[in-house]
Amino acid sequence: MPIEVKPAHEFADMATMFAPKNPESSVCWCLSWRLSSKENRSLAGAARAEKVRELCSRDLAPGVLAYRDGEVAGWAGIAPRAELHPFANSRKIPHIDELPVWSLWCIRVRPGFRKQGVTPALIDGAVAYARASGAPAVESYPVDNGSERVDLTMAFVGTRSMFERAGFEKAADTTSVVNGFPRILMRRTLG
Image 1 (cartoon, rainbow, N blue to C red):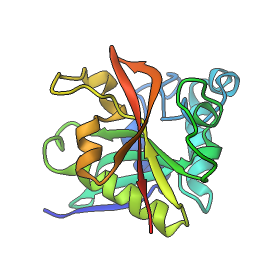
Image 2: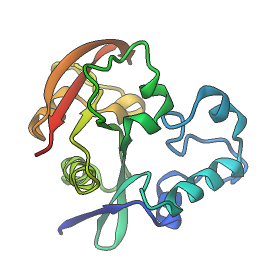
Image 3: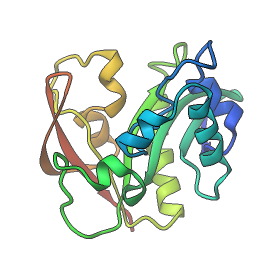
């Protein structure tokens, strides 16, 4: 079954990935890496969903979604780093140059679709979307975990090996740590 990756413009499909059973619950919706801490904390419950609805309606999608047989299988958050407040202003993840890179910060695969090639398809689809949108390079900030297992709740940042398989190279160390593992800055230059 082929996997199709498309820009995330369909709010209902984003809701499939992120919406809580109780609409008033304040779940991530993958906004914490997009907004300032103040704005992120101020959005609660249904307001978080409305922010995502707004992002989906823009010309530039908030990321990409993977589909298998028409069903939403996964998500990758990708956008210009300048739009992502925590990365644009990070003291822990360096800017290695002035290139207006895009950041690929979150990968999530729905249960029932894991271990079926969705993650590599998401990374490739996110890179293709960035390239088509004029990005000169894509950065990711995965953990450098060697062969150690990463807790599933923190695996959204990805691992060094998965990005190496997708053509990314380590560009810098960071002082950021996730689940006890150091994060590194990896980059794939687009031509």
